[in-house]
Image (cartoon, rainbow, N blue to C red; front, side):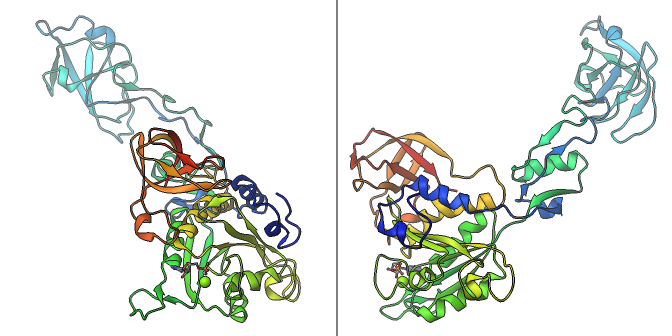
Length: 429
Ligand code: AMP
Ligand code: MG
């Protein structure tokens, strides 16, 4: 960080690196307060506690197959041409809570998941028998412990099954339920409001007149925020009127854990209304980041410091600090900026350990170019270990964005890379 003290100090100095900017953002983010949510509601949220096994898993010795509970020693000599034959003294189904004891020289029919009778030390799968009811012929020996799931074979009592910071995906929901948990302590999904700015914006579904475009950013960024675990709403088409921007943000502040604007933050001009309105507050910093796309960035907090409602301290008492990102208006820039900066911030609000996109090394199928001194994120199609850069890399070329599943990273010091070069590739969610 060169400076975070005054709003435009950073913008006037050398561009920040991607990592410097990410670090400045994460330093300003405090995870949301944990809440207890029932399992179904906790789906997709991030654990704020460790989940331990209330009992050993499994909590009783049981059969892993349908078959016959036996004493292994009794079937040691069983063979195809000389089967061992036993009286079947009972049948134990899954869920049967009766107490059974297996007498030596006998067998009991047992189902998958049923509790092993006392004395038994092996299960002979039904496929190794004649499937008899009153009496059974067993054609193969079963070793001690065959087809038995022992107490604690999955986890010991008190063992940590899930750690804080883990997202509750279907597998983790199953683990918590198996550990007997009705509810878990998680961080709630961050509430995100996306405001798109620009006089040119028209709502999709309504006719276009020349000079106007349909608003895609607010839909895209709200969807990306949901994909990153947030609950997101959009507020489309905030006009390019400096007097309208702050009231529009103020209106959303009480209902948001994080605000995102798109547009109105370019490098100059009267029409950069977001920048013009927010730089006055003193809590939002605008800067250049040495990347392409997405060079102009803004980040800060609303609801504290400064003056007035958005500045926060005055009037309404101590208010929450709500992080705000001002993303560039070009859709590709907005998208890449979201993935590089907003996504980690949303993860940090959720207390998640998975902060950034997964990356792989892959071989370029064609050459790429990149401006000197800036890190490029090029839209690409990743297929196994090969990555193909898409031909249209303009920040407005949304059609190419729709074909991409990955971003090729070209380091700051490279201006061109030939085909067959190995590169880092970010996998898009
Ligand atoms: P700005 O950052 O406001 O100067 O906008 C840069 C470019 O992005 C312009 O071509 C805008 O028309 C375009 N743009 C801005 N907002 C949106 C949006 N919500 N959806 C699609 N394109 C947009
Ligand atoms: Mg604009």
